[in-house]
Image (cartoon, rainbow, N blue to C red; front, side, top):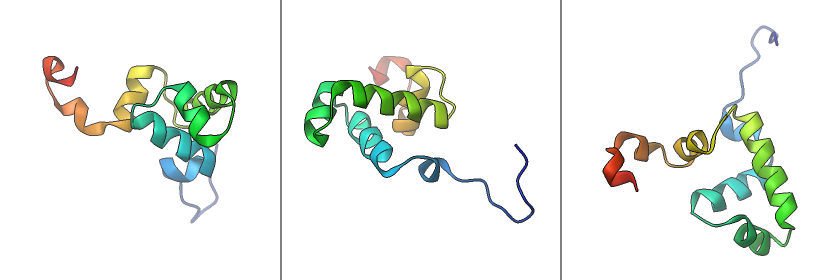
Amino acid sequence: MRRAQGETVPNESERLSGREREVLQLIAEGHSSAEVATSLFISVRTVETHRHNIMQKLEIRSVAGADQICHPQRALLPERIRN
């Protein structure tokens, strides 16, 4: 997609809706989909839909990629320390 001259590319947080940012934050904190659903008063299916949309918008192809978005400092740690 071409952008108009002077138009900026949105950063990761600008691509996400407010609710998607809330879901991402809770997931990043280690909450399960069920816990996120309970906290936000939505269904587990809605959480899974938000998770899917987040991964598409941020062009994340795997859970490992999502983990790097949520915990960028962990990518710098040796494998044995990360877990």
